Length: 85
Image (cartoon, rainbow, N blue to C red; front, top):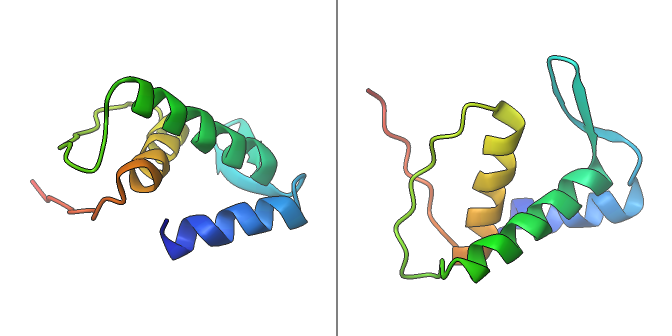
């Protein structure tokens, strides 16, 4: 698991009700963010996503995209490659 995710989970345990993510009128606490990432990981695993998978994301919602990205990093120990078009 990435250092970022380890720190996120640790921070969620220490300060679960602090706001972690804000987008427009939505605020997500650290506890909710960590729970959402864990739930997304379970979904990815049920879909058969693993370390050999190549996955692309196209999600218009910023928070959902952030959660899905974190879940992919956690699930497949992925390396993120940024592509500028």
